[in-house]
Structure formats: structure tokens, C-alpha cells
Image 1: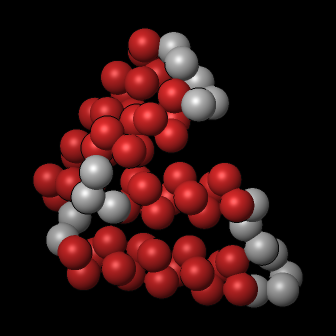
Image 2: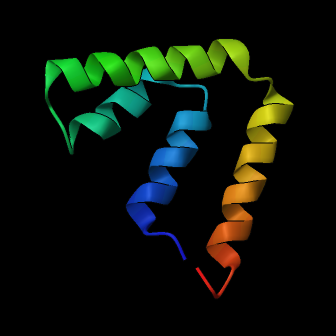
Length: 70
């Protein structure tokens, strides 16, 4: 399965809170350039993906996580 930190990052990335996602990323990389890029990516995802799109991505992640071959 996927490591817990990656699963949490994906959940926050697809979730509604920009600040929670950036706070999570800053625990691992507190470089202003990385944080600005993370903010830009999160804003893009929030603007372009529908809730259905996000649910589909989460479903795929769950399938990968539950696959014993991964």
C-alpha cells in the first residue's frame, strides 16, 4: 500500500483547504519556492477539477492502496 504520509498529502491536496495542504507540505519542505509551487498547483486543481473528478482520483488512489501488488 501507499505510505501514510502520501495518503494524507493526497487527501489534503484534493480537499477544500489550501492552508491545511500548505501547512502539511511545509512540514517536509519549508522552501518558499516549493511552497509557492504547491499553492499554485492546489489552486489549479481546485479551479479545474470538479468534486466528481476529485472523487474519481481518490477512488483510484484507494484502489492502488488496497492492491496487494503495490
